[in-house]
Image 1 (cartoon, rainbow over the protein chains, first blue to last red):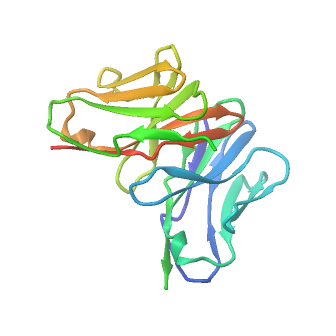
Image 2: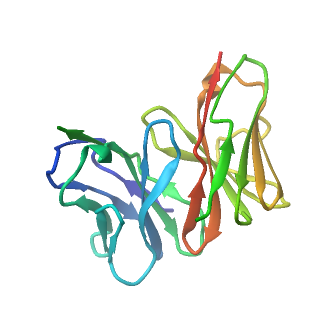
Amino acid sequence: AQSVTQLDSQVPVFEEAPVELRCNYSSSVSVYLFWYVQYPNQGLQLLLKYLSGSTLVESINGFEAEFNKSQTSFHLRKPSVHISDTAEYFCAVSEGGNEKLTFGTGTRLTIIP
Amino acid sequence: GAVVSQHPSRVICKSGTSVKIECRSLDFQATTMFWYRQFPKKSLMLMATSNEGSKATYEQGVEKDKFLINHASLTLSTLTVTSAHPEDSSFYICSAGQGSGGYTFGSGTRLTVV
């Protein structure tokens, strides 16, 4: 069975500093990997996803994540954060061919002015 | 892009009453709809998976008689919380599966049972 671990429940970062949100997964088959962002009292918005091909995927707002199969990781990074990046970030995995998404417990990113 | 409209966004109901939450896919056909529940400061817990025209598949521990899911058309899925109690208060989110790793989430429903 697939599972996702987000080790950091909260990450405070100063504005314009870099950030990395960690995500590790467990699966016995090929996977699709996702990062979602959730603002207060809202649904989830897709940030980026890895399905196949290049292991480095990027979002339009400066985030990137790299699929590392040997380390079973899909860490999310941004070189310089903004106040508007304050939100909850969820890593998720689905096993290839199975649409069921399994979410990590989330990381709350707080940007300090 | 694909949009899933979820209503209501917030609802307060009395204990013992039933509440219906709707999710509509606006510009695509959602053959599969996933229903999640999110507890405060917690992750999303998958409650059930529904496919258009067939019975929903519930996750272990989810009461199917309490959380009624209907997916009668390719654009509409509903979740009815029957005989709601305060412990059912939560944030409920639907997600339409589009195949090949595509999912579109609704904006969520905050249910408060008093």
